[in-house]
Image (cartoon, rainbow, N blue to C red; front, side):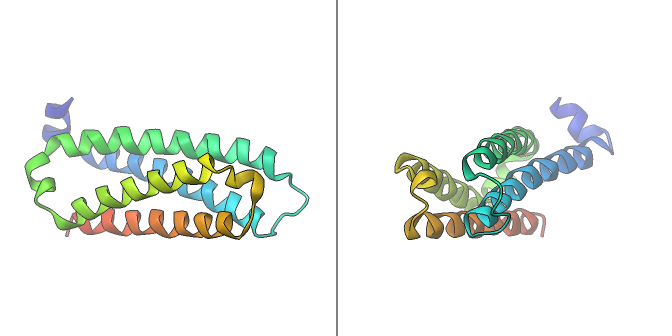
Length: 138
């Protein structure tokens, strides 16, 4: 697989496109849920939307993680020397910690001020991950 990614002109760009699709599924569904929690589409039940959007977001994360791991495997030493990549990995860890805290405290049921701050923080962190991802190539 790595040889295919290195030797075929279309393989790596196709993998990057798959990575972006995963990110879109992840971030788009998190933002949709966040908008509902902040009062948009008030007729949609939060719990039902959460089941749908979080499942899709997790699927998107899986796609992004798998494609990202393959991209990493093609040039690990270059990426480990890249500050944007290291920052992206750190932000991914922060995003994971925030998600664990959010779900661990039952924030989706409470929907209190802290839950809303956690949701806004999550979106901001994921946007920063996207920006770092774009800077990796430059």
